Amino acid sequence: MVPGGDLGSLAAVVAAVTACMAYARFAARRLRPGLPRLAALLPVLAVLPLPPLAFRALHPRAISAFFLAWVAEFRLLLLASGQGPLRPSLPLPAFAAVATLPVTLRDPSATAAARRPGLGLAESAAMAALLAAIVSLYRHEERMPRYALLALYSVHVYLALELVLAAAAAAARATMGLDLEPQFDRPYLSASLRDFWGRRWNLSVPALLRQCVFRPVRARLGAPAGVLAAFAVSGLMHEVVFSYLTLRPPTGEAAAFFALHGVCAVAEGWWAARRRWPRPPRALATPLTLAFVGVTGFWLFFPPITRPGADKQTPPSLCDFEQWIDTEIKEDDKRYMEMCKKWEA
Image 1 (cartoon, rainbow, N blue to C red):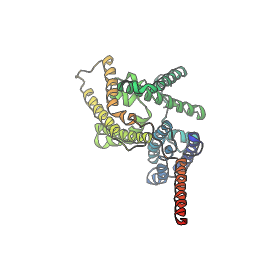
Image 2: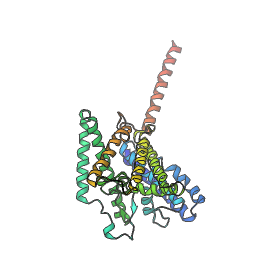
Image 3: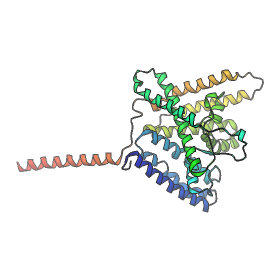
């Protein structure tokens, strides 16, 4: 942590990330895709996981870890192979935004009818008010039933992600003129797990996993293996983000959550391929899908971040280190004075 608290840390992180992206853009413009470009980008890939640890508050630490240790790492790996949304020809601010923020450039060939509308001002205000109300209820969490508390956490996660990602996209659109896709498409209307994870929830992440994991694995082992691999990688990356949030070792529960959903998504695809087999109507499929996501989330996804003390962890700061040094010096001085008194006696 730098002097000035998390605001000072934010300025330092922005400066460090901008420098990293300037170097990455410079290297990508001068090297062809392949091993030379990957070798040139390795220093940036090694540095990006470190800046989130500059934050003491858990929300900026977790969000920046998602942006830098997951999104930026995967997009730079795609850039090294000549794929993905990053283009070295982009101006530096746009390059840094596309590299680090979970935003997707809108397809210019898509018609206006096919484009999903972004989050409106009234809808954003309503979500922010609801999120504030949920946060205010946490003061009574000791008196809440466990499942009611977990339900609040579920809505909290959705609202926070929706607002943070919409704000990031709006900032990029306003400052750099980037035409960006919204990050969610009404996940509460999902009629299947494949619909929820692939077409409605945090859409920039499925786009990344589709390019980095699903397609290469599918080309070699088939579509079911590609789906399982994408869910497995998503689980591992969630373990990483949870470790940033709690500053504790991974528990494996998030990985198990996504592995379970990957298996179920493959089973859904197998069932859907049997055209003559019955499928539940949408009015039944949607509540069943949401119930499955919620129940398995209560069982595996939320426990690592809701256990007692998980939200109280903070990384050691320079001030903590200086305080420890000062304490040790005072203790040494005290022992020295006692020794001198003994010799004088």
